[in-house]
Image (cartoon, rainbow, N blue to C red):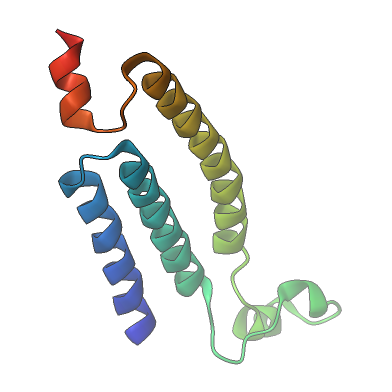
Length: 116
């Protein structure tokens, strides 16, 4: 139960960074923290105490595999999410660098003021 609470704390920290911070780099860090907290939550959903990976349970009947095996679907979802998150992070950093080249600052309020 404490692990779910810690995943929620990480999620709230990431949302705080997204909403309250004005620096673009800090907002990118907030997106990354939020993504990691969601990945942690998905892994926690698929966890079973004393569970065994289903690939090691070959030769057993399906009922035994369902009783002892860990759900592999959240693990596959998180693996996919990590790859997509890396692509999104690279895109955010590239956009951040373009904004810095144009406005010479990472501050969102300054960029909004200079835009006009």
